[in-house]
Amino acid sequence: MQKKFYLLTMTLLPTLPLVAASCKTKILNNVKLNSSQIENIRKKFRFELTNAGINKYNDGSGNGKEEIKKLLFDKQEQYKSNIQKIKFDQELRKYVIIDFMDVNNLPLGHELKLRIVTDRELPVIRWTVSCAQFGIENPNGVAEEVLLEVS
Image (cartoon, rainbow, N blue to C red; front, top):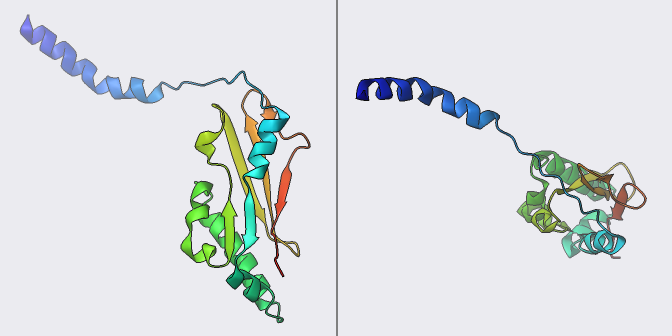
């Protein structure tokens, strides 16, 4: 009897991880964000030059401006799998402060997507907040936060 049980468990044991790995749960959020919640997300954005960034951006040659734009683009690529980490990048923080709501503080099932656009005079962060059930919830679609240049 023990041998049968042992053989049965040993033959089933290798299949357990396959079953567990294929199990996927989907969380549906029935709560659509209201305008004040979206406004709260917008207010949490901070995208501005530091004093060193202002000096570099306004160096007169245009090179500093292009270097900051390239740095923003490169850091976005570096952190695209976890954009939250861009806020803490020491090289970037010398010139630019980027801050936004912690995605863990968003209502369950919602996602904050960011993209830094550098092909303009002043770079912008385009952002959306969405969930699987309602899609993009920003009132006018994609919102933008312009890099603040303090002269």
